Amino acid sequence: DDIRKDYWIRRNIVVRIISKKLSGGKYYKRKGVIIRVIDRYMAEAEILDTSPDAKDGGDLIRIDQDDLETVVPKEGKECRIVNGRGRGKRAEVINLDKAKYRGTLKILDSGEVVEKIHYEDFSKIA
Image (cartoon, rainbow, N blue to C red; front, side, top):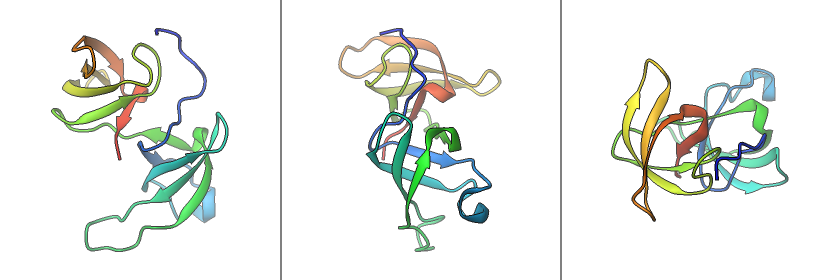
């Protein structure tokens, strides 16, 4: 499905908060997991710990997708395609082109390899 939509949030993906306004910037650049999609553009996310021993996560926040960005996993890891071709599918990251902010992904259920997927169109799975 090549159709791009203007909403992309979905459950169980890892996102990065890019809002400096939310809670006075407390969560800026922090990662969270979307635990519930409230509507197309609004989600509830659980803030992740900054490091394994930090124990500073766990806060639940409501957040608009405009205040979020995807988190690109490392090569060889799984992701969820959140927009454009293959939307909704699980895939493996085959290769990342850091200069062009694009990845080559292998869709898990079909084995199809898709190239030039923009970083904003796939995200790490929680």
